[in-house]
Image 1: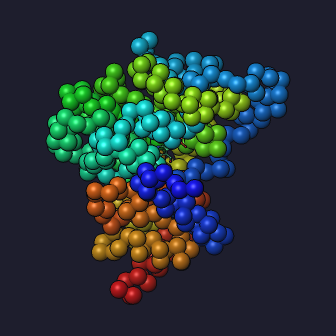
Image 2 (image 1 turned 30 degrees about the horizontal axis):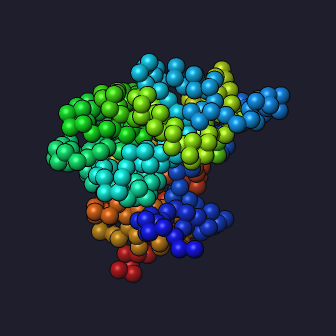
Image 3 (image 1 turned 45 degrees about the vertical axis):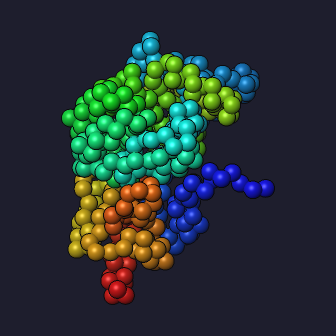
Length: 386
Ligand SMILES: Cc1ncc(COP(=O)(O)O)c(C=O)c1O
């Protein structure tokens, strides 16, 4: 059967393409955005898992908006106002997909940061939206360029990851959050704030959500993949009730509802007395892995490139001096270390710089050190060959 024409717009996933090589025994992968499986909070769930079969209602069809006890917990946890609502989704990726399906017609214009999260680029490309991009500065999007894009009057929404961006790790300053809120309000552009890394902060104080500066004109996506476990496939979207109702209508046509037993497990985890300690441990582990990776980058790769410090999340963006990032990533894979070149995170119109995304959440301190040693050899090899 012939595939639909719009599939031609779907960029492929580099990370999936290299998965076999990146997960082979001899390779250390800094490529994916995988959390550390040794810190999955499974022990806190053991007794709940054992007693799941006592509640047959959990195995019946459920409501599209989500398992009500979990929804009520999340409404309270996120202080959702009476005019706003929340829908539980299959990871925040489904939230992004639903937003694209509800709000985008072919040719609608949206703005994304450049670079941006590949899964969102894919979802918006499938909707055949026209993607405009705003470059990033160390404190968030370039506000002058953002305003000139918004002032064209055609932008439907601005999709952004203000906390510990994927792929760059950038965290927007307070001033940037306020200003983006003002601009969204002034130009009637909705803000789609994707916040999967927000709770993984190992340095500094949490800042208000950017959407808190334009709450009636924003949707906020939360994921439980990074703080709990990605295999649960759980996230949620919150925002004005009439928008959540539209997401609910489309979700009903997509998958009826999210898996109930897993929503129940997530609720037990979020309300477990040991959950705050689990989060603290996770943050400490990722903080020490981040420091180990960046110490090695400074000492072993200083002559080949540079990075900006990050305060949380899972990624470091390593900008290269005079190298082709695609070629370097290919040689790195051949030499036992997987990394992602910048080009993967740029949609059609923007030019990718020479940079690599490096993940530190998934590898032990020893393996991070070894990965950087392997990268140092790759830089020497590529330089000699050039
Ligand atoms: C910015 C961003 N949004 C969304 C997702 C998808 O998260 P989930 O596992 O909740 O679907 C990811 C996953 O890496 C991400 O980096």
